[in-house]
Image 1 (cartoon, one colour):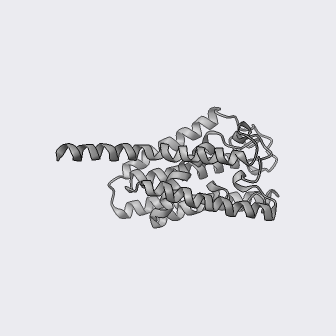
Image 2: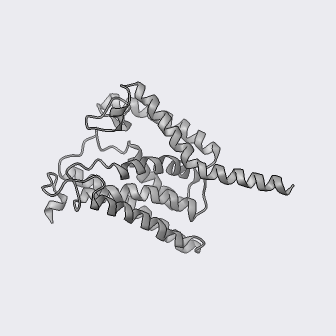
Image 3: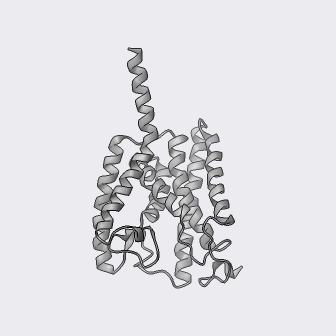
Length: 245
């Protein structure tokens, strides 16, 4: 049992798109399909569902910090809640509890696009199934995506064009703040002060700081792709209204 929480895990390393990875992704898909059954449920039931997801997110993140501290991996250069997914764990759970629309905008546009990348290409290294890190990664990122989808499909929230502008503006403000925090403490949160030391998608892009512009462009493309279903819906509605006049 102790090996499942070991800092130097002797078990099998993570295998990208191996059986365990595919099973974890399937479990997340099935969870989202299961939550669809609550569409139209009474508010008391919906509140329980939201609180359950929020508590799991918070407890899972607390456990992640405790594990890193216990194995000597916790540092301010790597463990402050400044990476987007780390932020969205905390505020995403708050969104579930409060149904806050402003948080929802970020959870939908940034949470889904960012967490999906982490789910498809997780940076787990030696920590394959059934290590604690394997479960922690898929629970946190899986629920970030699930929370945003749930609030959209079950609770009926949706982004607007103004949502895209607000999220893009505040995301850039946040990047500037984190850039100076990185310079002050010698960290590289958001990977905006330089390439990470480990292999990443940034290796395919030009050198710093030019790759930041590519990251911005990729972000905009993800926002538009996530907004596309609503744009199509609005366009169809407008056509139906025009046809009936």
